[in-house]
Image (spheres, rainbow, N blue to C red):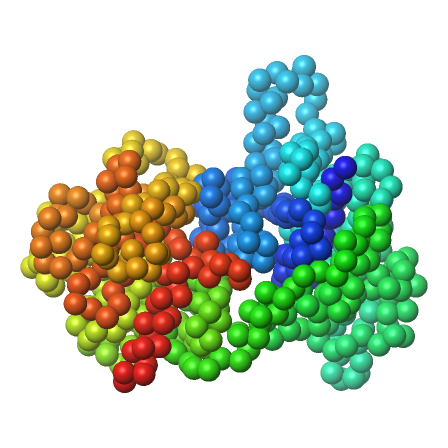
Length: 536
């Protein structure tokens, strides 16, 4: 029978439930168990696809085209296993499913209520992955904190499901905060006590407490927390601040979190977890032999989580190259033709990031022009690729009004235009070209040498594409379409001849970069930046 672990949070948000969930999953996976993680978000949006990045951070896209919470990126980066539509559920989707059933007459005229109908739908979704037979353990992270009104149905669903699953088939891990008061010079356990007390009022007794802290927990504090929160002393786990999120699995192993979980679920230990490759990655990450400075030109740089997967992909690629990657975030609105040299000074490479809308576009185009003309390694992703096409059209082909119809619907030279199948779509949510699509790479190109093969599949999230009416004109001038979708001839990759590294892609390679498999485009871009640094 599949075992279920529920991870809740208390006291405050942003304590790291996603990282704790991913770290525990990594440890259990390293012991030989088949593990997956799912996230239940309490907001009413159907998915984060229509949410502003300033509101929610990055929208992560799965292989099957689900727009999901950014925590799913952590799950994939830690486990090296793809997630799917079933791994992220929102309150909006829960209510949508229930209302659809009511409209279909599935409830036979009964009054539809939070209990049992909403909680039953939550429980059904909590068990979908477990009932597939593909996993030994399913870890479910509940978004928000205990006490939030919107989280109550999820906590109630956990209470009911634990009773239905029976003893030793589930457990609850509660992540909480033990703050340090500098004036008093001591750690305070009262917030944790109150958080657990609130959880108990809802009928849920946590089995394990993971205490986020800036200072080590003494034996006395662990004893006090265990006593007041009705948990065993060895089930009070310290989660101290770490220099990198990739330290957390080893810190949790030191605290024996995985061992305690297996004991409580009555599962065999299968020996010590095999973490050699993880330790090797950390060794290369923490002991670089070189350093590069890469500019990230984007529209949402004030919020680091807006480019979470890109930043993590740079960490993976840096470790692979035994190189420290220092990312300098540059707001594209701040770049002009007059100050671009100053803004990009001292950089060994520049990545122009994804985004939507016209704000900051001209700054991205000015940056790409400077990069192209000054032989600086360049990497463009999604809108970054489209801006590179616009810049080349304007400044090399002489198409002075070259643009995307997203920004200028009336341009006479629409080198980027809306995909045909997108033109009839009115609803914005979940209707972009999403998920994994095939790409065939031309032999002898830089892209072919990077991937080492000619057939790949990458994840997408866009409505606009390269206008193939201009393709011959571009290729004759030196901007090569080195990757093409075989089904609709969509240009997936462009690269520039006679440039040390100028590669731009329509897809999102950052979404597939993991600790075990750093993405080759990022690995080669960092290597090119390193070569440029040595050349300077």
